[in-house]
Image 1 (cartoon, rainbow, N blue to C red):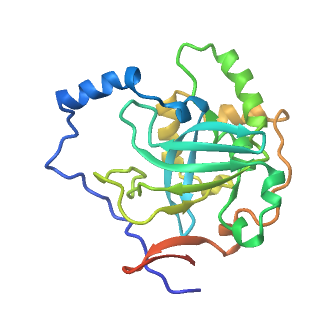
Image 2: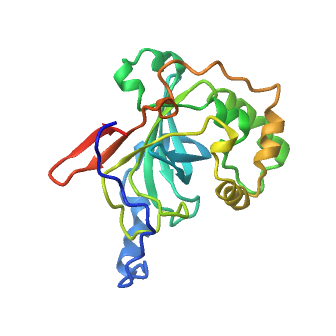
Length: 249
């Protein structure tokens, strides 16, 4: 086991000098932006999903992540991650999602940064973010198709805004180096309180989602090289003062 500097896990307190207010000038600029500027890269976003991630060196540290994804092609997606689905949500990270075929083509060193999605999908942990007025039967049908396309994929998640002990991004600004996050592979890894909070936010039941998918979505066995945090090989990025390095925990 290599020596490393541990990241602080205490609650980050919001700076008191600002209440997050928006001036009239900034509001006017934001209102006029759609008429004056181009946002073409964001136009490709066509999937909205919600799941949970964990820190591999401290699996009890977990975060709810809302994913807004652009499907580049059948082998690749790129997702912006937010801490909620509200208009003032914090952009907390990114996730790259690739097919099983593409994952297997990676070298062994690269594979250690990637996690599987099999458990997330089959367990009901990963769900679509749907509009409130869409009928539940329509949501279920669309979700089964979307999640079947994701069950055999692999993700590389970079968290940019650290979470506190309650799984909240409570600091005023993102602090510290980026962190590599992973996903879950068993029921006993998931913080039940955080999952209950997610379900309440979305008005869903993860248990019901799991039951809906039984016999309808079944992933392939997880490819060798993924989920290495489970095998005693978690990797993380550490700030050592003069430089940032990636080390085995």
